[in-house]
Length: 195
Image (cartoon, rainbow, N blue to C red; front, side):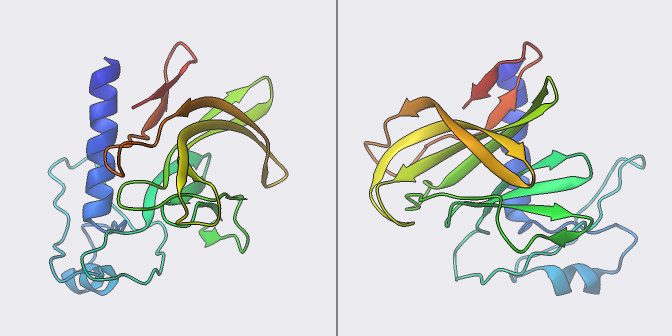
């Protein structure tokens, strides 16, 4: 069950990155999707289930380099709000009422070579608190520095800030920059699962 859930989450993240984090309603025209898409290989999404709808919730303008995926690694929903992670610069931004907040909720130093960076997020509500679990490749200095570990932290969301960081898991970042995992999920048992 957990393996299937993690595989589905991974597939969802791959699809999000392949479509450069843009989704549009199938009722919109081809031209609209092509306008939002940043690569020459974009195609309209195909929805085969009449009970499903794909629509644009928020458009993020990033500078895309040739042969580079979107820097947005994943997202989490907090009610109607969306928390998005930027893999390369270690930031988490909150989108409230369709508007991205000016300041990030969090900005940490990440090693961002290849598959390293800000990689995973999961949310949990417990006794009136909102806990935000973050998995990232922590750097010894500014973004892009040498990695010191793949780490899982727990933060509390309080007054639009992520506070009280607590290191829960410290994994090695070696031998290389590939396959660092990072997908997070809160299981029905209340435990945090990391892949």
